[in-house]
Length: 168
Image 1 (cartoon, one colour):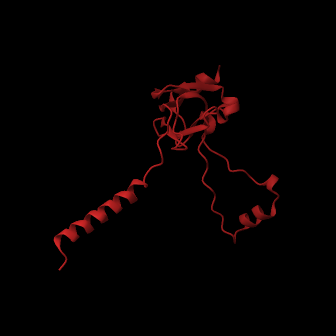
Image 2: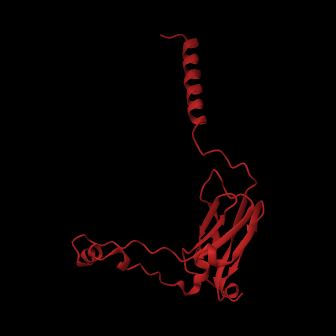
Image 3: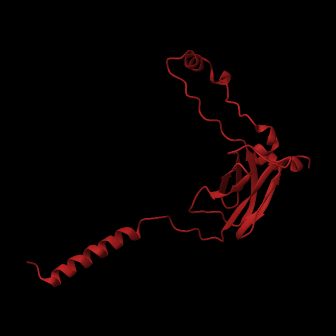
């Protein structure tokens, strides 16, 4: 029968080893810069825009991107694309784009599949997105949206009434 002293040493050794193993696990290092949060509402004519549309913020200077999906009430909340960078305070370009259509499931034995495989890529049909009348095309890219905002450290709220912003 082992002595109680050796049992305690064995238990302590195992616990110390587990502590060392778990110390290296988990999330990556937290971002070093002051972090921002952003949320708000996106509407068109006072109504929420299409469900699952994307609100994307991009800060070229910091290489940071954050995005949020629009819910049924038109609300979004940004999540950092890269947790190591997070959402640092700074100047961001904004785009708002319609939801990405789900990939069509086409059976390899179907006529549609054969047509798709035989047609040149330039002639391939792009999937259409329904319900985009509430997101004017100018907001679909950073280059044309003209939406540039300053995120301050801490919580920020930005509402986007697209019908009014489109008239500017």
